[in-house]
Image 1: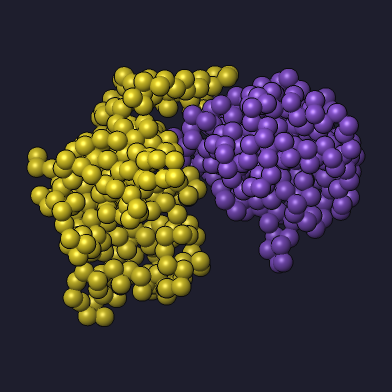
Image 2: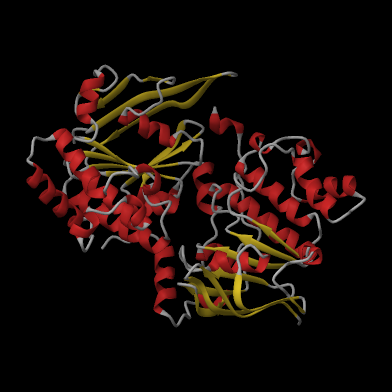
Length: 248
Length: 277
């Protein structure tokens, strides 16, 4: 297996605050990898640093064997796309779905836009009836489907998912998770997924990394987590917390 | 058991450009000195139910009910002045996100003292002492420091504890908690729930716990009401959640991923129009 994404001692510093303290990570091609931790653990920062949205102070990021520089070129975004947490904030409020989906196609100079838009909407289960609607006319789940369609339209090989369902109701969350699994299987995508919910990560990912205060706590397989083979107290606490409230 | 709160056929209606929207459509339940959970998805009317009881429905909306009584007081007939006296004193409410529900330009201590002095005649020094005691009761280790901090200087968990302290300082008999832990990290969530649980049972309060998380609610509450499209579709004891009858309740329980079960794809809700009927 080849590695799709390889991160070596990555540091991200905001002013003087070290948000990421030398994190290393290896994600194989076709794998689904999870990042868990509490807020402020640096899991989203790691994702954003890969996408070029957070400044890397040192360390290297390698995507499909190619080392990334400070600036990301177009070819990078053909390979790597991101889906954000809040579907209410990540879609342009004054653009129709059609316009939203056209943007990446125009940037990358695709000629067969029409066909791709129809196919992308079909793929995320929306259908062309949604093509000329605005984001405010859609429910949260439908918006997140549009965001996924926008990410998929360039046919990337890697998807960065930043809490893609935490703003959604549980029933809608199930639909979106199913959709993500389906497109991953169909297109043999590599996922790097951030969530604070251990149950979602064990459901979606084969391997995961637990993070705290900008550092990796431990690397586990989803199976380890299910069998509760964890070595660090921090992970044990997270596991206990996800079991729900127990009266003392 | 005499009920603390009686709700019968509660309706909340919002006028919109496209006609009337009924957010709550005939909800009935009663609350004793117990923990009652109200669960539902966004738009199910669970928050509007809580707000109607508290008297915080937006002015353009209309609230009607056959009965809406707190300790024998008819809330719909009560004057705004009487309701103000109840609100904060005998009925308190905790909101979802301390970042938005605390006053950003007032220190935490002053906000707590303000609540107390609105409802009781106490000296400045005594109010301060009681605020310290309350901050200690919500397990804030250094009350004198937190007292002088502003909301943006504390973490979400700390802010929510301050909120609980503020709500409990006047000694309410009933508390409405609207998604009190949804904005918090999972581990912090449990701390806050633990504090809430202890204080509610120590003081013998009635608690209405509004949440979208059916599993969390069932682990915390004695009884659960499940709402869908403004109506109660099922009421049951939290311990008997596994025996839920309504397909919506069962669907909500099933659709969440769980550690240790391997279900691909996840079961999704197959919404039936008759649920909303």
